[in-house]
Length: 387
Image 1 (tube, rainbow, N blue to C red):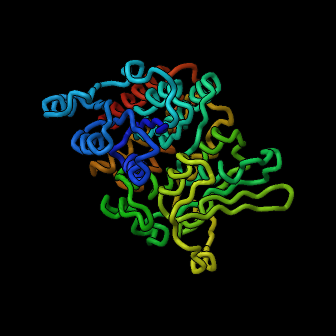
Image 2: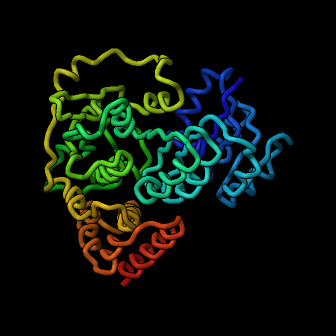
């Protein structure tokens, strides 16, 4: 019997990678749901290829356009994620949640009750709403697999390991496009330079986060939440080749180093299949292994890393504040309204506002807490910038 699969955010890079994996094994999988925001044309191509009967298009204009297309009457098209209850009559085998942004939180949490296994590639959902996600996972007995290469590597390395013997976990960072860029020229960095990552092909937003190193701040927060590990046991080290994804040092004197090809195919493949399934991958790169070139982070070059010292140990609404501020500042940089260096400068200043610091003491109780706070922070930032 074919295993049923749902892909939330199927037209993005993660979704497309999963689609290509399943394409080579169509006899064993049935895709029952695909979703997209604007890219309805790509969504239709995917639906026709796999004979998918349910589509969700959240963008209103794209939804109107796809409704006008001549498509099979067997395909049902919905405009929101409330339609889950109409689509799923019982739990399916696997779901991928790869909707970008904080908008991916609600559908991720809703999807948990309808799936036996869920792979989550949405940073914001984990950072802002992990306590809610974890509660739903336990309640519905759903298995969770992290898809980010670093978190997947940690998850894989910790199988069968008592977390009490962890001494330190190191997440690697490539350093992005500005690892060796002259510091005196940082004030003149242009958007085209900032989105040109040396190792990964990504969207503009995540590319900027990688260039500032904000993505690593987010990944440390994710690791803390997913694995319930204190911040003092998590560190970031520079590894320009992005070949090593995580290093785990244990109190018994042993250290695990997780290496895989510099793409997302490996973690996504392993989130879908059990460990006895094989995949074609590159031979071990001895040239890279003989020159790993690990480095400590230069805080003068990447000052945004200092934010980690401001984070509360207990999960709170402050993580939502952090995500919201970063989203706004990146948008301003992409719109040429602020300098690249302003992202970290303004971030550190805004986070010290008493009106926002108070959220360090407030717990997340429901999804609306996060969504309302996100809107409130965005409104506050807009008023600050306009004035």
